[in-house]
Length: 184
Ligand SMILES: [Fe+2]
Ligand SMILES: [Fe+2]
Image 1 (tube, rainbow, N blue to C red):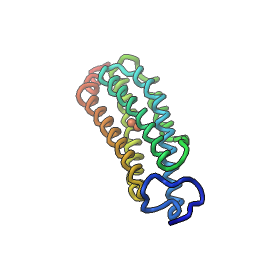
Image 2: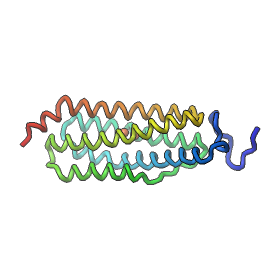
Image 3: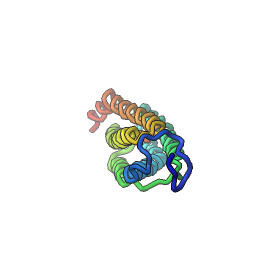
Image 4: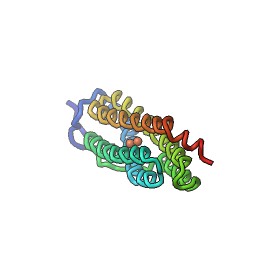
């Protein structure tokens, strides 16, 4: 058995211990902190999109994804716990930029229009794709590092992000894009 320098025993089975690949484990932890900032930021940003949207199905879709997003924050907190780390958020410039872009679209479009809804969908799908890329990559990395329990949690959120993205595509394809195309 190895002697640990600091901390308590990890609660997961590792194939690759943090002593064996400290730089990669550090990168993994940093990326989780980045996502933690991003998800917390979304919990604050999504209500603005809900009130800016008009179509009830779009409002509902963002509302239910807001509830899921709160769950994503809790899952990341569980991950920090499994890593034996404090939950620390590290500013995610990408997510800040994506939400700024979404707010810009709202400012530049007329309230109550399907055109604004289309803009909200476009911006929201960029957010979902960023999350899908992040969770997909970190799921793979957790698997490589032998962090099975953490990989499971990341996979659960990844599935919800993919469903949210698909729902937005359906809303755009089935109704809102046509409505917007008819607008002056
Ligand atoms: Fe999320
Ligand atoms: Fe999401």
